[in-house]
Image (cartoon, rainbow over all chains, first blue to last red; front, side, top):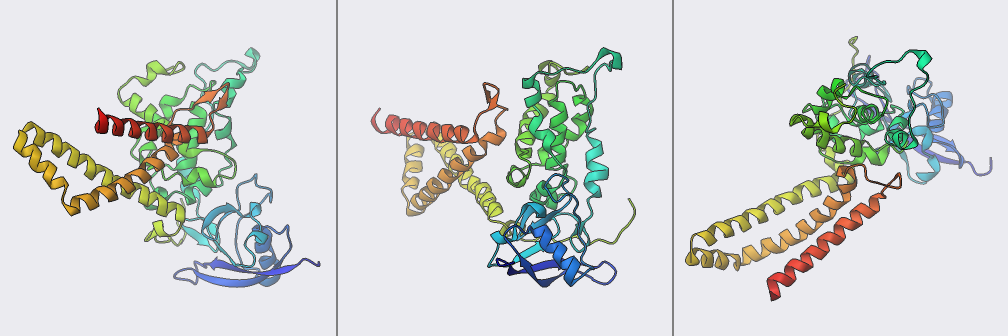
Length: 252
Length: 130
């Protein structure tokens, strides 16, 4: 194509079987105006080095699996375009603060197997009704209380943006606490007491020092920093034992 | 969890890696000047309770060149701190809504900054002329 240009892509390589530590490898990649960073990586894998390892799936910013550090910023690589970096080069690294398994693949089990299940990321009904009772109804106002938080796609960009998570890996972190708030804020849910231990802990909302970068990098418009800091107030009220009187749905 | 060999990247120098983190560190660091200024004021209050001579010597100490340099530095850093304070206020505020829609973050920040400016002018007027 006439408008094809060539950009330099620097990729972090790490082979756990051979390397003591990661190093960078540079590739020359042709691109056009609509080539995403992910497509650049796919070009490397298809034409230059088939051993390059990275995660991806949907290519349209909905599955949340292709997050990478692009020139030091956490981005979905399908949602970031090579044209915006040309004529400079692009440096691609695995998401910060997570252990590197191989090349651009991180070990995300701390989130998927430990932190996320701990907050019961599903509706905990107070008195479950039989199916015959019909659906749990909700007004648009009640819906908007949690809607933005329900847009989280677990892409982990917010964790790569959170130095507190990097420094103290026990910190529950932005997405988990935003999702905790998503269920607590849902009028159909009665599970806030079951989630309180995670929320009130030193590693819960109190581990946040309001750097605020999590909310900047979220590709889905979720605001974890707001969720966490609103819940510092809730956590304080819970400490003094007043939250259960203030939560109309509380203490079921 | 199965044991897999992984590489954990060091966090050393993390705050220099992104301009966003540098601004965060300046924000947090500026609170040191705020705290120091507050302590100096509290000492003044203490000296006031100890009589006229103590009060006068505290006031005299404030006129030293080091003190004036500190107060100019504190004014600068505390002004920046005040700005960052309101910049993060939309995150610390409750879920504010008007007609079901979230209040724009800009309005919360602008409201705070205006309140700070108005209060500062008011305090200056009271101290200077009343």
